[in-house]
Length: 270
Image (cartoon, rainbow, N blue to C red; front, side, top):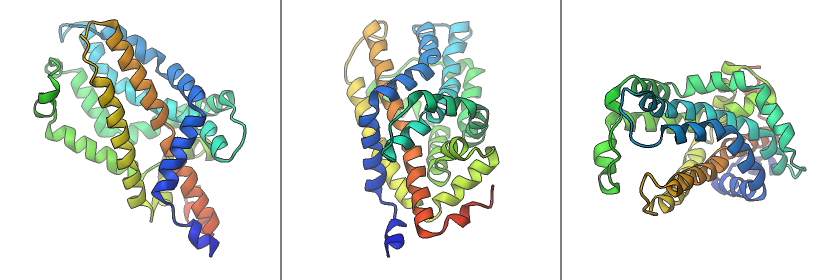
């Protein structure tokens, strides 16, 4: 009976676990996120301001989304051990978490390249297209001028991948599997729980949109250094939370499989 109950992974388990880990480990998470995002922040400062599309600063600005995929993956890998330690009630060791993530970066980047292929393709196309650099519209015209069918397709694809293949980076770090084996493991782990994961992601996305909306509500000139600082602070705050969620889901799914005696289902990719 207890195994049957534990097999049910609830949205509250995911959302509540993610927020608890984030609040209790916020200083360590912010430190790791800041270390991982430091090159990104420096490049954003260099690329900020008006620049011709064919200038090196214009090219650099278009390359930032591609770099963001790499940095986000590295951040997630480097917090896996820290998050699991918090979930298990152990003393967190950020240095060990950083080392564990750094050792698996090659596999992590391989996973990121496969699962974010449309995002990467979009970023590469923008990188080599001078037309991709447009004036930033006002908030009232953002959707009308910026959102294209390609953008919608990429967002939907990313959401579905996040639901069906959740936690491959945690698999790679914890179980030391290869690129394809980690993706296969995450596919099998999420079976039967994908609606729960989808609903949890929707709730967490709304929370992130709310936080970023508060930041964007502060009307400052783009040239004001305070605006850049707010952007960086908001991005780090959101990054410190989003990097926690996949590992929390991985932990809940793994615990559910082990408790129900169904762990043998996810060993075929070993």
